Length: 123
Image (cartoon, rainbow, N blue to C red; front, side, top):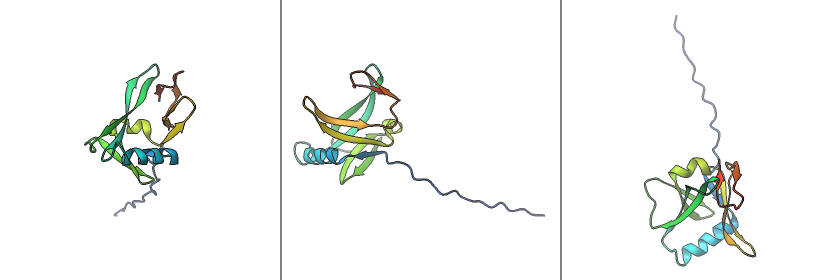
């Protein structure tokens, strides 16, 4: 008596994008890439800092490194340090201009809390 095992594969569910850009962030990066940062990439990492433990770290680099994930959204390419990917899955990068502040901000569904000054977060 022989038995056969049928292999049924479940449909793969799509993963959320690693990161996405708001229209404002894409436009700001487009202007930066076209001006002083022409030919460079913005690399996003997470480092230990602040009272909550982690902070976003943005740097300009000349080319992707071996540990970088390349993310392209709205025609703009950014790099994400592979060590930061688990902390950033599903994050949207925005650019805000307020009365006393202008800069990139992050809407990160993985954050469990932020420090009072907003400099750092924890997951």
